[in-house]
Every structure is written in structure tokens, then in C-alpha cells.
Length: 349
Image 1 (cartoon, rainbow, N blue to C red):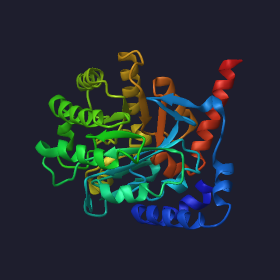
Image 2: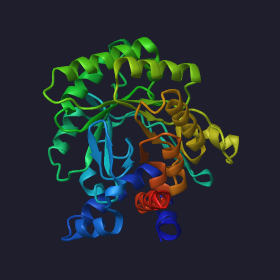
Image 3: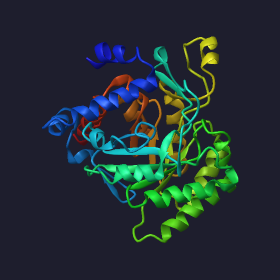
Image 4: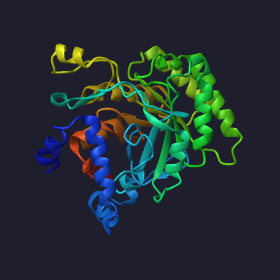
């Protein structure tokens, strides 16, 4: 029903507006008695064989909602009933910011892809904490950390540490986002010296806490293999807890849409089916290079159970959805978990 009736109607509306509309509708629905239990029955699969333990956290299943969907921690309670084991909020910056000028989110329907140049639009770290204090769910929550656009790269470490400290008591793990293509010069923070500075400072901040929480690094699909080797070296040396692979790409490959339309859309990070193979390639490279010693959350182009299983077989321990959730609808997480469970049962025979 979603793909044949609901999605065509939603896709008549500007993508950023429809995102807000859907959230409003879902939040309104959850005021009705019994809805939480109904959604759990419709979307969740509870089976101990799906559980994953990673960096000290126990995930009910391997499927999560990627950062960028719930930027302000405003609807994670409701979405915790839609089959996900974890939800990553953000990207969160120290101060709230409007992001880039609109329009800034575009559908490439024929390619099942999105291009966005949102620019870390969010209400800021303090606003996120106010929402996180309303937590009613036991689902694992990640905090995706970024810097304010107006903060020069030389001072970026202060932004990451501030947001890290502000969110620390309210999320279960952290993801350092230095790979989003929609913040001017942010990608430069992926170089070795900058990463060592940012990650080292976060580790120092964590050492002062009573409870140690995982820190992961989100990387770009546009890194070459030499750069990936540097990332692996940094993560191994500093003992960072894991890698999220990957962010969106500045590339415009594997598209059927004409070049004039792409040129008209302009800059932005592309996600969805065209990113799928590159994301999987990077996951496989890291897993093989490290003999699976670095935990990986795989994200990028997962629009079917087969896509999810491919990521897991390439070396990901967990996966995240974003564009696939938009194109395939709210049953996708359940379909993936059913397929994973079926595969487990076949292998155990």
C-alpha cells in the first residue's frame, strides 16, 4: 500500500515539507490509546537470534535509523515502535542554525536516490537535551556530532567537545561527523592531524566521565584507499570504538537522470541506490584490512533485505536506514529483520 498509494501522494509534496508533515501525523497518531502496542505488533520482530552486542551495548536487532532523519531528537520515542533497534539523532551542533538556503532536498525518483545540502540545520545541543529528557523508550540512542557552519576549522574541536559534553548523559553512543559534504570545508577535518586532534580531545573528555560511552567516526564514501588506510590507522591507534560507513557522496555516478537536471539541482550529498555499491566496497575493505577488528555500522543504499544482508556479509555488524525508509516505507526494517532471521535459521540447519 505504501509504494502504490501513500508514496505517490507524498511525493507530490516538496520533500522537506512532507518530512515535517509525516512527523506531525505520526506524533498525532501516538496520542491515541493503544497505538504504541499496535505499532510494536505491526513493525517489530522480537527474537533473541537477532540480538547484537557491540561496543558494550546490546541491540535488539541489527537495524537502526540513520542520522539526519530526527535532527532535533523530536520523534525518536514514536519511531522506536517501528522496528528499529537504535536511532541516531542529529547532526547536532553547539548552537542552533538554519542550515543552507532552500530548496535543499531533492528526489531522484527514477534512481531511488536523494540529494541534500541541508547544512546541519538543527536547534542546537541544549534543545536536543530538552527533547532527550522526555525519553520514554529503552531503544539505543546515538548522538551525531557536528560543528557550527560559522566555526572555522581551526576551532572545530571546541564545537565537538562542547556538544559531546552537553549530550553525554542523554545518549548511548556518539558519532563524529566530519564527512558531511554540505558544510563548507568540513571534509578537510578528515585529514590525519585534524582527526587526531578532534578524536583525541573527545577521548580526553570521555576519560573524565564516570561511565565510558562509545565514540565512532563517520566517514565519506569519497575517500580513496590511501585515505582509508589513514582512517584505519587513526581508529586503531586511538582505539576509537567503531566506524560508520558511509556518509553521502558528492559523486553523481550510476544515475539514469539527465545531466541537465543534475546540474540544475547543484551541490549536495547523494544517498540511495547509486551509493549502495561504493558503501559496501568501503565496508568490505575496512573489514578485510582489519580482519574484522573494527566494528562497522553500514549505511548507504539499503533499500531491500538483500541490500542489508550484503552489507552485513561485507563486514558490517549493524546497518542504518535513511533513503530506503523514504522510498520503501515503514515496513522495511521488519522485512530486513525477517530476512536476517531466515538466513540465520538456514545457516543453523
